[in-house]
Image 1 (cartoon, one colour):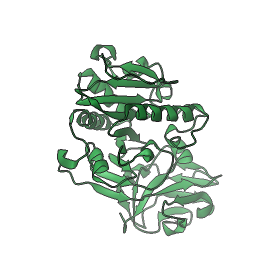
Image 2 (cartoon, helix red, strand yellow):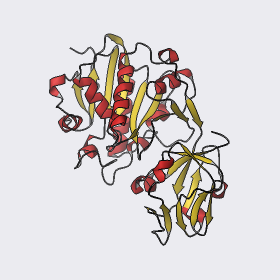
Image 3 (cartoon, helix red, strand yellow):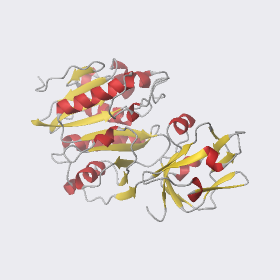
Image 4 (cartoon, helix red, strand yellow):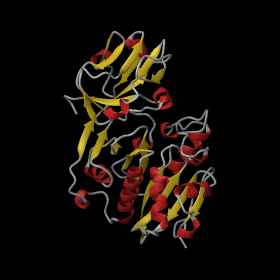
Length: 349
């Protein structure tokens, strides 16, 4: 029997030690077996230590669930107790599956991890996730996501130290260090309990699922995951990225010509610039109206003018300096509710 006793969990179903024959034949079968937000407990060889994996905070980001399914199916027995938190099950189940980031009229769960927690389904769910983490008292937490478009993998953290570096390097060599506060789970990271976000790449890419499975296997099987002794990988750092966001009242579309009378149209291949440099002569899209009336820069280090980084030439949107872009989305809903992309100046990345 598992040595760990689950706390009372209002919205979470508790599933201790799932066996390979009880989880279905595919990750989608596994999803359908989950009755709602689910907390899975996998007992480890050393019951005095634990780690936490969070995945499917967004219902359209399945790589973490694929990874967990793969490891459970093959009966991987971790070195320490593992707690897996899978909250956005209902959103993920909406036909045809793994399409909805969150249910309609629900707030983004990964924007709810801040006090005071909202008196809403998502706010209470975030609070319960924190309660599970605190009850488990883990040495570290991994939060597994997919990027909103096609992209290489990367990690995101609010800290720069060996522990956070080591956790990211289980999965990838790219690491974004940010001071932007959005209410994300990783913002609860501390020296005593490091938390990192892993973006495995595009949700539709099989290699993203493989990356998640390989990284989670290392997270479960390595005795020490908080030092860089497990890798000789050199991390590539991106510091304090800025967010390109729509102004209130503006709208977004994607196409090879201007599609909106008022708003922003990004080129349909905009995702090809993920983790690439863009020069001042590279077309990014079109803006109807004034640039500053449609777009803004969210900079963790202070206010910045949109014209410091982007310019319009006869309604065509260009960088005003050499930039590096990442987390570029081709999903208009994510662009509206979150951001269009992240960027750093080429002089500071």
